[in-house]
Length: 456
Image (cartoon, rainbow, N blue to C red; front, side):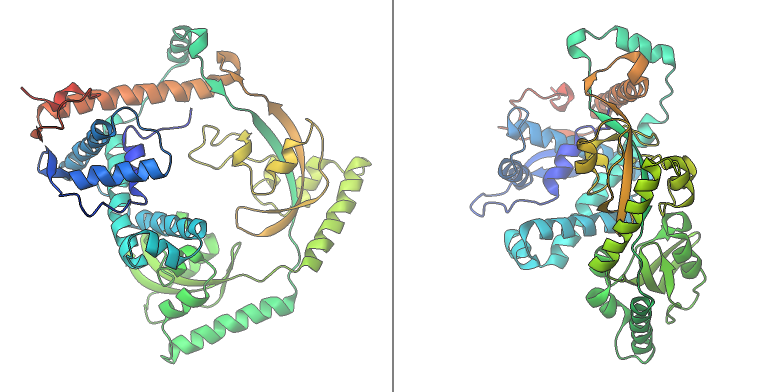
């Protein structure tokens, strides 16, 4: 089953877009956990946001919400003792994605700032960094507490045998998909124009006319980093595209700009900010050549021909995927796609739930029978490029109640999650006993999940 973040998940969601506190509410300290205070306004902000967003309350919100905040503070307190920290690069990337998604949903930066009580975007993001940083520290602390959970097949079978039929988990419908892609050709003059523009940016920076960060903010097509002046945050080579990593780690002078670098995402120029061991922080400007509708149509026609050849048995789908497809991730798999979503229960397998398929593919697959091959269609790949694809549906497993023979991996994940919850619950109960906790009058009459908050 999909991994959950015990208790902290709902609180972290609520904090991603804090509601504006009512100005006529007099603030007060309602809980103290260790040396951390929980304010009435903290709870009210969370409650308002959950209510506005339609999030269901589990019981009385004035009991449910402060208890979850208190649980978070227990983990944060232990993290200080154990020197557990968040990855600042991950924090920055998450906040940027969140801000971009929220602005797109609301309609504009101005509307977003207005919704957030007139705060500037920079202030909103600074506040959000604190929230995300705490969330990531809690998650790292939980991983440290839980450690590695090792289960044997007999452990899984034993758990399954103890479940009543009514409590068996439902396994969503999944599919296995084979794919062949073709990338529309980019005219050489379009590529030359992109490179000329990047060289012009480099010259402006070298002449001191404009800064790299200003140009990145205005022109870079990597929207997440553009909001930070092109800054990527600290990353290792493994986190970068290989071509980008080679160029970035060869930079030694922060005043210099790299040569133009081509990756699967487009064309970049890069500037070093700081190196720390095997990690570095850099700025970049990304430009992508635009794909014309004419070139899309040409790619469709080429795949139409290939489609006809496969139907006529002139070439097999597997050979075409291996030797012709532009999808480098599936060539060695004879076109079989592998789930790369680390949050998915199907991570590392060839199974996908429908919502996990690339944009544009789900609607095509949904109408296909097993063994059927699609007509060429347009989609966006993992590099955010427009490509043309044909797919073949290898298998489809309909939604069903779990059973050991067909769903061992899903059940194993479920048992691991239950074991994880048990370990964390035991840790919370133990931590309560050694932590100073005070709850103000009027906030104690609750049916808390953990009884240890009230110390007689």
